Length: 347
Image 1 (cartoon, helix red, strand yellow):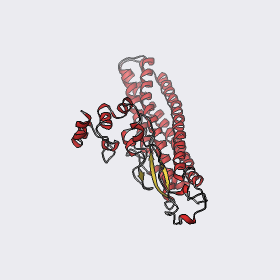
Image 2: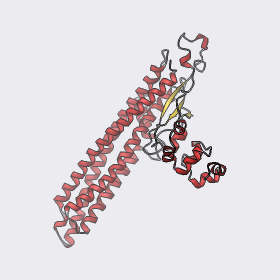
Image 3: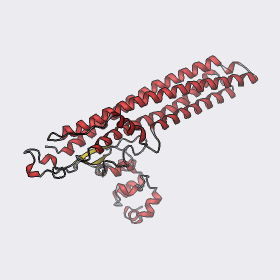
Image 4: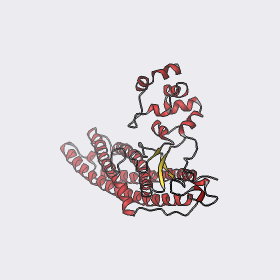
């Protein structure tokens, strides 16, 4: 019989899989939006056609075209931000509801969970920064970057006397670069929204939830930072939370209090439910344990060749490769701190 916290960990992993699929669907939607932007820009380029005129008239027409493109990109940015924020707010509602149902469903006895109001969830999504910025700032910055790249592409093509087809290729390259940045922001924003919604639910129910377990994805794409935090327990109101970086796939799993922590004598607990409310953290494999079981080639791919050797032979654990602020130590910094480990690893 699984304990409550084991059930909650299972739910967190299932939710992580769902979110990765959701991120994929958002990326595909972004592709459609950017494809339409490219089409609108190229259509306006053909209408103004600065290549068709010479001398100062070309520069006049170029300037008019650039003003047109600014209007097009501004409209695109406004629509992208509005639709994206709406989708993320809806996701926040879904995630808050899931967090409540997961705990209620895992408990062997009937419990009541407080669900934050919709306005609170939306406020948390908007007011909590990730990677140093708020959601709206990312999308405002994305519009500005797209403006700059598109203008530069058109201006460069016209000044070099390129054909409309050649300038069109420049535009597609510029919007493609912007789209890749937008996809990374969108993927990270999904993680941010999920964490914000879940954490708000858990903080509102601190009498039931005592902590949050960091759950990293067990594969070679996981960063050293997330790997070093895997399995660690944080307070329900922790400022350290996923996403830890752009593209982060880590998430929190709630850790429920035991019977005694809930103020109930274990002997008085309902028969058949005592073992499931032990309050212990699931004994599942952590990232460090998983990495130890992998071939040296995988360890080197994750950590780098030298750090892989230090992990295998030097006795260094994953947390020794990360600074207190979450940044990864350089090999030179690791050597300065743990010179003996280099000797032990034969480096």
